[in-house]
Amino acid sequence: MHPFIQEASIQSLFRVILIILIVYAVYSVFMRLIVPALMRKYVSDFQNQFSAESQRMRAEQEKKKEGEISITYVDDTKKATSKQDKAGEYVDYEEIK
Image (cartoon, rainbow, N blue to C red; front, top):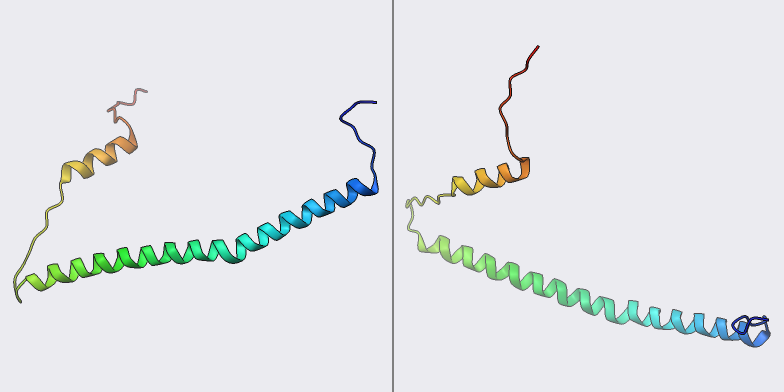
């Protein structure tokens, strides 16, 4: 008989059941305690980032006087190159019949 093959016994059955119960208990504790704590931290960080950005935008708006116009320019070359990069190289062609 092969040395790695064991016969089924009550002892090995109980060992497998015990391992399954331990894995389930660890998984349960992980899902109930650790995952919610990680999610709270993630949401808190996101809220802090959002509020900081909101305060920065509010401060920018308060600096402007009433009736003052501000124009923000967007670089057109960046837009054009990014579209061309995604589309690939454009080649003119003539259809020959």
